[in-house]
Image (cartoon, rainbow, N blue to C red):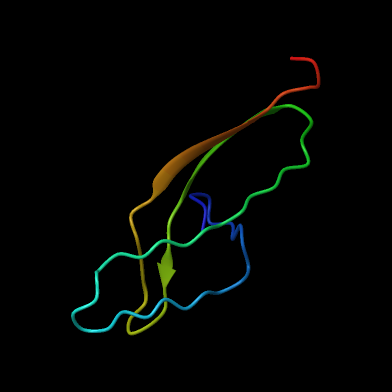
Length: 70
């Protein structure tokens, strides 16, 4: 979920955590833009649905598109 509330990747993923396992996992989210140039500044968080509803802290990111030749 991005910081403005938009869902950037509609595919839900399941990460299982068992007792004794590490408490962190890594998941890849791919972003696309149709802009030919410009900068997108946003942040992303993880929405958790089970065993309770919550949201992680956000992580900021920047995507910059440049016109060909720059």
